[in-house]
Image (cartoon, rainbow over all chains, first blue to last red; front, side):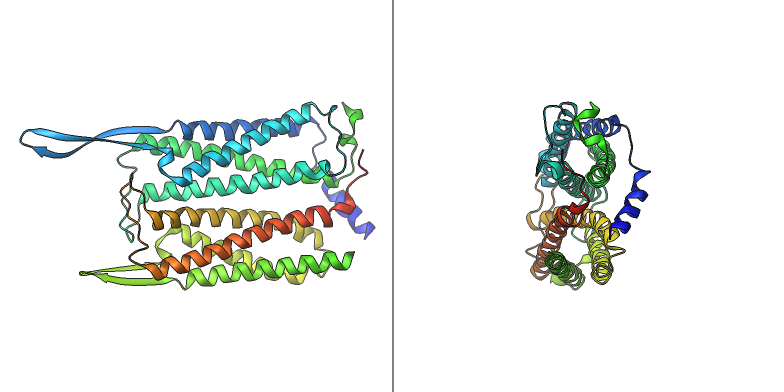
Length: 196
Length: 163
């Protein structure tokens, strides 16, 4: 059992980045991507006036607007991305202030566990928003749901941009989670305070 | 200690396998149709790409669960199974949330987009989908618990000495 674990660790050793700053840079990128996704989706709004009927010669106009909070999936998307950006920000600060924290007892695997939980949350939020956007773009003929992207193009474009940013953040979170778990497993001196 | 670890892991995997299998089967067998005036209103899981993704993801997770249940007896691939659990858990959470988003629209509609709810017309379909989503959600939670358990218990002996 000991030999097997040693062999597995040798397999992991070459892929673990030795630099202390690589994880902080990855977290910064993930934070930027998730924060961008949140902001773009929150400020996503479009108003359009439609001519509904014509009475005599004056057309009746109706102003319809599309906001992110009309759809619960997008609300979940915003909340998930917001929580992920806060998590990454807190982890960056914890990394930079490492001399003040001591990783004792339960605090030690907490980083990897929180990373995994946030990864699951982000993937849930991003996927729900993607399928909602697909429904808005293509409609659903079986349920008699019209597509809305031909009327609100700017809203759809901005939403697509937010989704792309969120998936980029998801890719970074995957890497970060992988590295955090590797950090727990491989015996290295990076966790000690002497390296600061 | 090792025996209780093994028993708990096997129990969790069995639970997850049951949940994913039932989610797949219940979603695939969900269909309902209704004639209103001359229009035939049929609802099948095929009609929505989100439900199709859900069925495919749960099927993959069931197959993986079956394989993992038998392979976890061999200690050589034990670590690999623990590592492969993480993307499968992610797949389950994403498919469940995607199916939930569309099912919520089907149940409540979206007044801003002019989408009417369909659950009054096809109640049997809605009930089936609800049951399948409950099973899928619990499968995602069980996989999450399994991941955390594996992280803290299976990988814990490898943790270096805490400073």
